[in-house]
Each structure stands twice: as C-alpha cells, then as structure tokens.
Length: 244
Ligand SMILES: *Cc1c(COP(=O)(O)O)cnc(C)c1O
Image 1: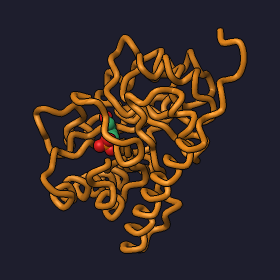
Image 2 (image 1 turned 180 degrees about the vertical axis):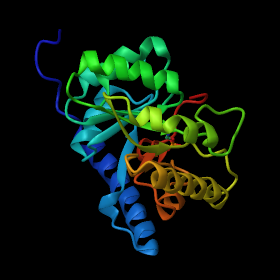
Image 3 (image 1 turned 135 degrees about the vertical axis):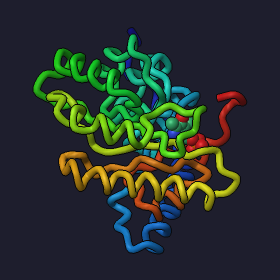
C-alpha cells in the first residue's frame, strides 16, 4: 500500500494534455457541425494503453473522464493508481479474464462472441448483481479474416439471445476499421456499421444506440458517419512504442 495520496501531476504535462484534448474535441465538433450533429452525443474515449499511471493522472486533471485500455492485465495494474475516470475495455477479452474485466471496467466494448457474452452475463450477475453491465458487440463489418468480432450475419442471428441476457445491457456496436490508406477509405466501413445497427434496431429495438468507431487516423470520418464513441490514443498521448 502507498503511504499517502499520489503526488499532484506535473502542471506542464497537464497543460500539454489539455491542449491535445481540446484539439481533438474541436475536430469532433467540426465533424459534427459538417453533419448537423450535436457534439455532446459523441464520447471521447482516451485510449491510454502503454501510458503510465502518473501521466494518466495528468490526463484526468486535463479533463479526460473516460479512459480506454486494451489489456486486462495492464489495466489491472493502472486503474487503482488513477482515480476518477470511467474505464472502457476496447481490446479483446479472453474468457479466463472475464471476471477481472467485469470487476475493473465500466463498459466492455469488444464483446466478440455469444459465448463470451453469456459468460460475462453469468459473471456480472455475481460481481455486480442488480446493475447490468454495459457492453458493445464488436462487429467485423469488413469480414476481415485477420479481425475478431461477429460477422454481420452472425450478429443478426445472435442478437435476440444476447438482448435477453439479464445482466448485460447491450448498448450498441463497435468496430475496428480495416487498415485504410486514407480516412476516406474508412468511411465505407463506418457507414456499413451504422447501416447494420439501424437494420438490427428495426428488428430489435432494445439494441442500444451506441456506435463505437474511429481512432486517431479516422475519427472525424467516423463522427461524420454517426459514431457516438470515438477511441483516440495517439492524437492525445503521442506515438506509442513500436509494436503496440
Ligand atoms: C489502440 C486502440 C485505439 C486507439 O488507436 P489510436 O490509433 O492510437 O488512436 C482504438 N481502439 C482500439 C481497439 C485500440 O486497440
């Protein structure tokens, strides 16, 4: 156990992170303005993988209220050191880490199979009885063999059963765009996710309204295409060490 509260974050670092945050929020607002959307309908998830806790405390002081991590183990070490924000798991979740993830995170964004959803439902009923666990279904909308997620048809087939799980709140869909040469190339992916969500919601109105799509290289296009959650790392924290 630490003796006292963590040291106050470096004001210069807070100022730098606040400036990067403002720049991203302005770009989100501009994308909203182009498409007649309300910027308050877009949540910025600051993806903080590889960023150490002291810098994340500065990020919280700079105004970030939602942080995203992609590995349960890394998050488990950092979350107790960074009080205040809500936490989204944006990366893949292995079945054996389901319980830890439910204990740590407020939203699980990358639920990629019906089996995982059923396991999370069981665990959530034990870990947080009476409070449904918010989740998004990850959809492999490009049917990219290298990617995880429900294929569109599989999502369609599984959805009714997933919406019936008593301890999950299926808030919407999430996708990781294919590696596109330009942001415009990503537009097709995002438009397809939005169309699928609209289609699924017609048959299943209980499917929540969220669309998590868009990262540093393409979040403005994602917002133009209806993203309600963007997951941005490098534009806020700088480049990560290679291979992460
Ligand atoms: C790392 C990551 C992001 C953020 O990527 P950037 O390019 O740094 O903005 C978003 N979503 C997921 C699932 C990630 O793993």
